[in-house]
Length: 51
Image 1: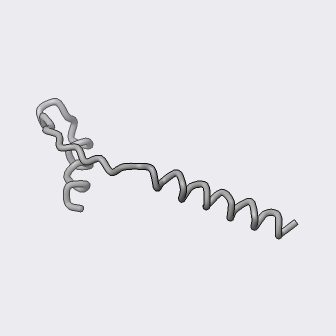
Image 2: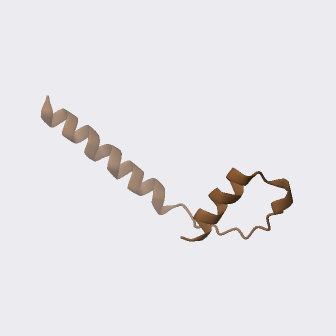
Image 3: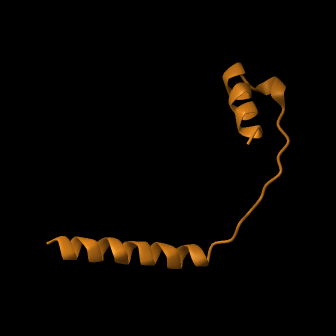
């Protein structure tokens, strides 16, 4: 029972690694109009910007 579960997890991780090998990184630059945002969204974007 434990061995089958371990193998299932192992196979799942292997499949995930293979899938990620074919993925490409995409970077987007955006301009945001602050006049259209509410305060919560502005605060959230500011915290993200700090990273």
